[in-house]
Length: 157
Image 1 (cartoon, helix red, strand yellow):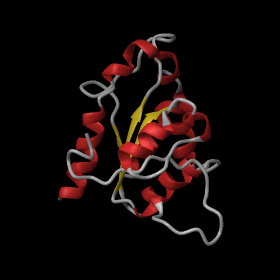
Image 2 (cartoon, rainbow, N blue to C red):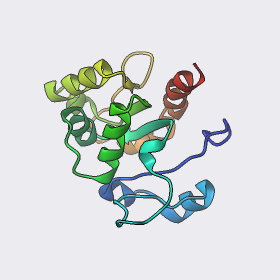
Image 3 (tube, rainbow, N blue to C red):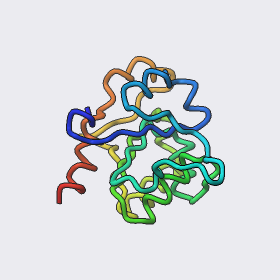
């Protein structure tokens, strides 16, 4: 979808998230390898923090809470934290169940990220949490278009 809109797409995954991806297919489609770790000193190539926009999706409860607290224990979290600090357009698309979304740490994290200008695509009219144990049944309905629209509106302004 982003490529159709003219974006150059790079994919950064957490080490745990990488297991859910077909990294070879993504690398073929995007033209860049899926990154999940820091480069060795002196390695070249584009830096993810130079991106005009980032979409964090599907963003887990853990990822959202860590990001809001400034915990950068993975390369992916560091890329997003830098982008927020640089004032880049960032959209977060939470993929959480209703039990996790009901927790105070989550609602505080969403509020904190929004206060920093992050588009958190979550809530009525956007993307709602699913019932515990039903995540697999809603993956096909993830509103990727809303996340892309959020960052696109920033970058076209």
